[in-house]
Image (cartoon, rainbow, N blue to C red; front, side, top):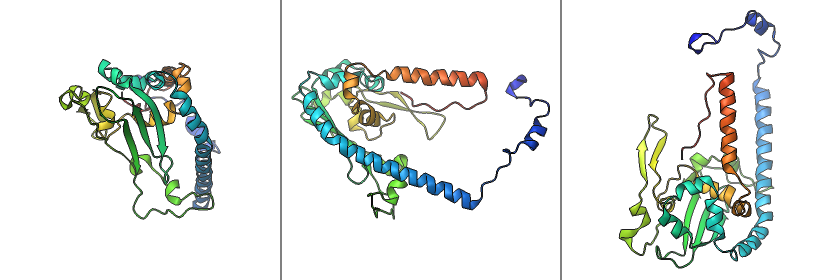
Length: 272
């Protein structure tokens, strides 16, 4: 590689490019339309399978729910085995409050199954009077969205779904027994600004319970709970899920990529 990171083309590279039959392939509007339609149909079928899978799994999840309630501190242990969740729950007071958690449930939106409400059920505790804390990811249908279902119940709005555009995380009011000792007041979340106006930086996560009382879910903790921890709750409890190993593999891949091409942009990772 030349000085300054500029790559030099090998001798004859231009000639090879001119003679390469794959270098100047053009896609006609008709072919582009065919590809879009094929991709859309695959996406539609994946939605059908996802919805059917959730329906089939529901009875088994309900049965598992009753079993988990009989295991002492099942959910606090399972949640703390996840690195992202444990990062949010570092304060000893948070962990004490979490020890009263006895059930976690995910209720899927009947209109858009990718949206959901997390429900954390607590037994009587010295911190708050709520017996359930909720975090809703509310579906906001775009204006003039086509909601006419096909034979499989799939709508055009579902095919055009965008999590960033169509979902709003909601705040939930916690009724603290002693407001002046509310964990979210004792350990507030501290936000900062970065060079990128579209990228928020959290300096200090503060209390875990800011996750419920503040609407934004910057690091997708709720998505992690619903789609990873909840679905593999027993595996988390038993310590059979190593999410740190996944992160390590991704970093190794990035390092390997840099050895090949130092100018290749690195993928943007979530900040925690």
